[in-house]
Image (cartoon, rainbow, N blue to C red):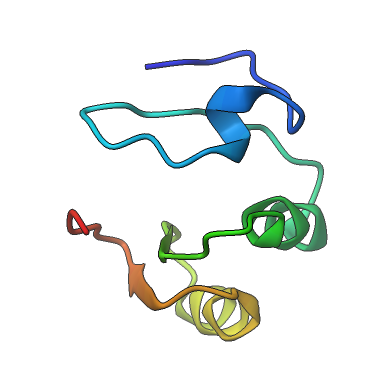
Length: 75
């Protein structure tokens, strides 16, 4: 688990195939979407929230090959 990361770090920018979790903080919903979409890969994405409408809204804006709500499956 890697925390205290920033968007310019290699561990954030590159695909890491292994049991790795990178934690990024964000200011608001739009900032979270911007961070998620700032990738050349876009393999997968997930949204975790108790607000179903928010989850659907965010998922529609993610540029990813596959997306999940409140779950995640290894690619």
